[in-house]
Length: 272
Image (cartoon, rainbow, N blue to C red; front, side, top):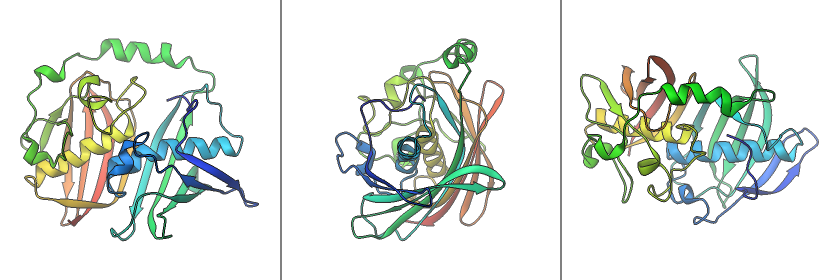
């Protein structure tokens, strides 16, 4: 999505001699409702990854807020679960697997480590993004969350006012549908986005609900994750998420839509 205008999750940026950026995080849960989630919640981590990476790149003078960008890969590893909400962090430009990336370390108000987040993406500097996207959005089969058969909330691990995004599990696969009526404010308590496509926070929550389905609603924590984004998932169009592999403490998943392999996701788990 394009860079933020007039809204910022981070502040008090300090650019250090090594090019890293120290920052403070907003504590305004009204402006940033996902900060009310546990800081290790996959949706919260993916929501803040966009804002922090873009705002810190802007602090370094490396960001054009009028250009669209896309996250192509991310991973994170959580620290001890007994931590408070996001208070501060440090952003660094890094090289991971030979590719230009970013890494962010987050801490709570007491300085306790929350998580380390790595990621990389692309910026559409010359492409007419809206025109390029139009063909896929028009071609995608359309449906409505009002007519979709979602799984029981108790199997999806939903908190109060959260919305189901997936149907029942069937032989390791679940169908899903996200549209503006179930995955955007004001209809969802903390999910939001540009409205152009299903974003990484949406997909992190889709994966969390899928894992919950595979565990028949038994609670769990996500301790680390990796996500690879290969094709946009369209809003208002059905998709599938399928189980690729499962170990004692890890689940691998793939999101597919309209013949495209869209996103591969791996969650490492611990008992809640």
